[in-house]
Length: 232
Image 1 (cartoon, rainbow, N blue to C red):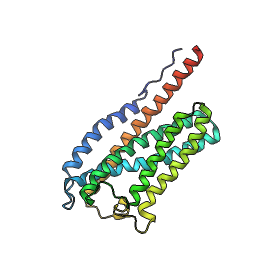
Image 2: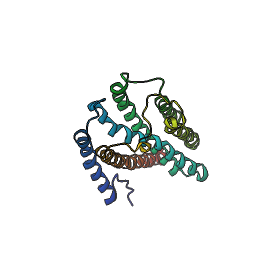
Image 3: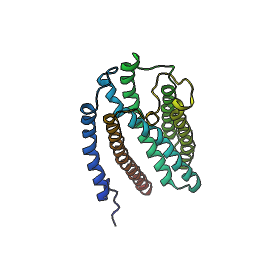
Image 4: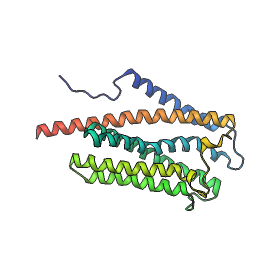
């Protein structure tokens, strides 16, 4: 019997891919044309509709990875380590999107691309360093079981960093120039609110499809390594 690992084996996955192909271009155009412009920031404020949804994924991705890691520590099944690794990969990808888009907005709003006194920026930078450390140590450790074990503990540290980043504008009395919680404001106009939530949905479709592809890629690599081990 021939072993197969297909990228999109089920109609549901193809439907999700179709949603991504339609929703991402739509929300980009929609966010640029529909909501009113904030006069103090000009057109640059519209990067908010990309920056915040992407930041959400970058923050809860490590938390999701930590949950997978806890299950791995209990069961010692490699499936859960692969899921944790996949979640961390996507989180880091979205974190790069945050680092790219944030300074564009900050320069318009604050006059500088990076405010060193801002608690959210500094804590997010620490989160990115934590994610990089996760990949570096995982790359350096060759033994599979030890790699999975160390990665699981690093996932917990990344999750703690993500939670602290989330709380930076909520728990610190003077967090800096960074805006407060979007959900806590309740002051968005209807056009902004509609665009924001459509953006959140669209970028979560993107997260899901990337997660599926990355996880199946891990399965392909594992299958390849098993074949090489049998042939050697």
